[in-house]
Length: 306
Image (tube, rainbow, N blue to C red; front, top):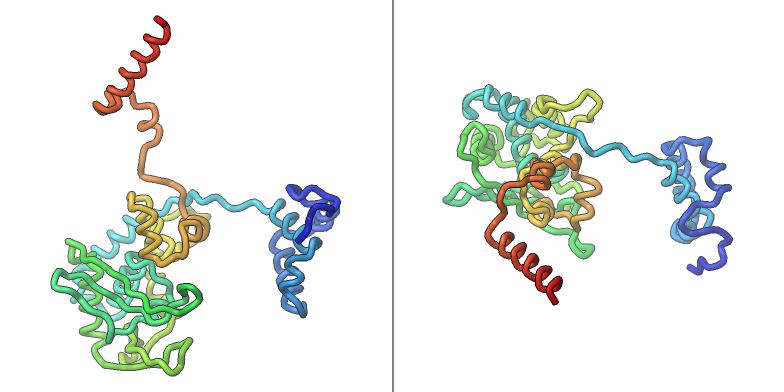
């Protein structure tokens, strides 16, 4: 689209747009624009109209994004899980909550993904590595639906081990073979993982799985004004804070790019590194650093001489 003669600076929204939308909250304006597009006969054409572009610029200019510095204390939830005791001795409801929470946290699962796990395609290797197969999750690859395998390693503490929780859950709750139609592809049947507590032959969907996960998630420490975190976002954020490479996190969570993870899923920008200490540390540096500094000093010395 040619924008050379619009009559206003592209870097700033025009004054009329700002004045028109200052009386609206950002939420009201976004709602109004979404309704407008729903009723429009040619959505794509409208999105390129100069008026609509100016509207969005004005809207973004008056929107203040919330901070991403929530401090979540997962140690409280871990302590709660440990306090429950042996996984095999848990009641059915606690076993379901523990299994769903552990798998969601370490697997960076969406709720819909947990509901699409196909037990027929899942396996545990000899070295206790769990491979969970998700049939046609929401993610796509080059526009096509995929079958995603999520690898989950065991934990040395059996009370916190997701592989142990999965094994106990399958043997007790999901022991009855039951197939359901895939929610997006009715002709495909999947051997579902999560079941109803009242009837183990009946599957449960994302909403019920969410309630089980929330039972553990509410144990996570957080500020009063912080929302209860989503398992997919919290697990990935904790991994980033622990120093796991963002590339590995993106692959494990099957995000399309680092930008998607950073912008929409990383719920805290805090790190575990003391940057003040690392920046101002006066302790001797490595040998290579000292050599470089000596070479620089010699270089400056010779310049002064000659």
